[in-house]
Structure formats: structure tokens, C-alpha cells
Image (cartoon, helix red, strand yellow):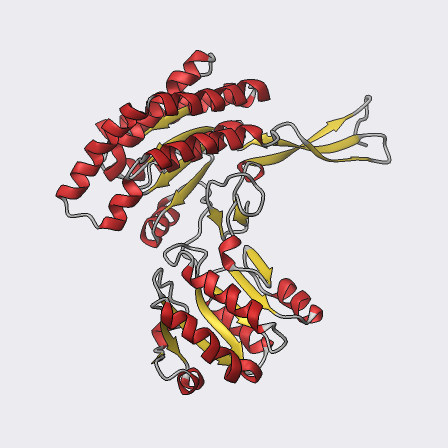
Length: 419
């Protein structure tokens, strides 16, 4: 075995051993670790600034974009947010040990299901060092050990954050191997992680589509993932146009570069004459480029004619595909063809249409009269999330604490034997 193989093998084996101990921790100890880490992060912010500056300097020397630098920076605001996030996770009820169901068999055997940790989680992610704290906090509260492989650009920041976590773990006599950050920037480390199926129970990639597809194609263990967010809003003929305008504008403009931003707007033909010129002016003022079908371009002179490639594209920018449809069925057919199972919404006052849309559209979150931007763990009341899954096994949608557990069967008998 080479040096990288040895490193990853050692980390994986230590994580598996630590996972048994973490699974047994009381809620009190887990919360104490989270709150202690939150306090230490605030106390050691200068240390974090110093290590983060090393990453920022490297990124600037490589000519990284302003947006990339912004994602990489551990500002005081980001540090405060990380600490608050840990406090939020500590306040969420502990899912481990929860009996989710119990029933009695005719032979007197009592059968139930109880929540248990997943075990060892491998997390592979890019650029944002705050993910190190977010992921570690959630994994620990759910009773899991975690191996974190951040992007090479954030190496010093990630190692500093992991060091703080491990110092607090040691204070509470929790194995420090419960949270580990891969210390090499060699890309071979990712490939080696994906081979450790005997120790790592699940892999969660978080980043661009290229990273996620690489992980999905090479992993020997289950992968919780979403490739991209091609989200849609369908404006029904029975929509309240004021509500529709606010929902569509927020879905596209509030933060266009994220996975739950609207990328396609579908408008029923019976209200297109009134609605499209109305919303188009707001989009124009916000510098949104509209790429529309023939009917859209006829109603909005400044819209560009959409190409075949525009349908189903994740722009992650102030660009929007717009199509006029003849019916809700056509809208749902379009979503089924071009959507990514991430987030889709309908704006309508027709209850039966809303119910049909909720039932028939296949996405991790389907909304009625609300912005696609709500597909987020915090916004949906989960407290926090480790990512959004568009694969249905074993989680679908934002992954909070419950999604970082599984259930096992338990049974209580009184001497029953099978005949």
C-alpha cells in the first residue's frame, strides 16, 4: 500500500472503532460537545482567521474569482454563524433511540422499530470551510463518526476547525477519531475513501455536478446525492397573479446561484397575456435574462428565443427559461422531462389542481403558492441540514438529524419459538 492508501485505511479503521463509542453517547454529552465547540470557535476566532488567511492567500495567487474567495472566507459573521449552528443542533431533540413504531403479533411477540446511527459517514465537499463544522455537528448529534474531505483550497481552515473539534471531544472523553479531516490535498485520497466499504457506511458529496458524478460512479458504498437543481414554478390559470409575481421573483432573484433557485417558469396560456409582461418588467429591472418559447417572445419583446439546450439547464445565474403551456398536464410533463427531482412549485387558487400537483410531481419538495427557495433544512424546521438528497434511498430532500439515522427492528418475547 502507498502512503495515501495507508492514511485513508488508518482513518477509516479508527473512525469505525470510534463510531461504536459515539453511538453510545448520551444526549447530554453530545450536546456538551456541541456547545463546547461553539464556545471554542468564538474564543479561537483569531486562530481561525490566521489559518483561513493562508487559504485565501493561495486562492488569490491562483486567480480565484471574487465569488470563490467569498465562499472561502471565514469572516466574523461566518464564525458566529457556525457557533449558532452548533447551538441550534444541540437544541434539536436527539433522534437516536427513538421508538418509531411498535406492534404486537398474535403469538404475543412485541415488534418495534428504533432509530440508530448510520455509523461512519464520509463527507466530500468543496470550498466552504463552514461545512466542516455543520457536517461534524450534525453527524455527532446523530451518533455517527465522520471523515471529512474538504476541497484543497480550504485545507488549512478545515484542519484548524477539526483541531478545535477534536480538542473538545478529548475534554469530554470522546474518541477524537469521531471527527477526522483528510490532511492531504492529493486527489487520490477521494478515490481511496470511496473504496473503504467495510468501514464507511455512506458517502455524502456536496459540490458541483462533476464532483457528485465522480463520487457516484466510483463509490462502493451508498451515496446520498443530488446532481443539480433544475427547479420550476408553474403559474396556473387560476393563480393569484400578485402571489405568482412575488413567488416567481423570489424563486429566481433572491439568490440565483444556489440549487433551489428557479430555473424554469411555466405559465398557463390563459393568463400569459397578463402575467408575462407584468413579471417580465420586474425581471428586467433585476437584470434577469429571459429565454423563452415563441409565445413568450411574442409577449415579451426583450426575451431571447430559447434553444433546445435551455430547457432543463441549471443556469445558477440571472438567466431564466420561460415557456407558455396549454395545461397543467403539459407543465407536469415538462417538469418530468426536464426537472431534477429537486424542487417544483405551483401557484394556483384551485385546491384540486394543487392536490394533483402535490401528488403527481416527483421532487424532494413540492410547494403550493410558495418560493422554491424554501427547500432548506432550516427553512423547513429541521434546524439544520447536511445537504439535499434527490435520491430516494434512504433520504429524499433536506437531510437533517433524522436522515442521518436508520431504523432497526427490535422484538420482545416471552419464550416464543417458531413452529
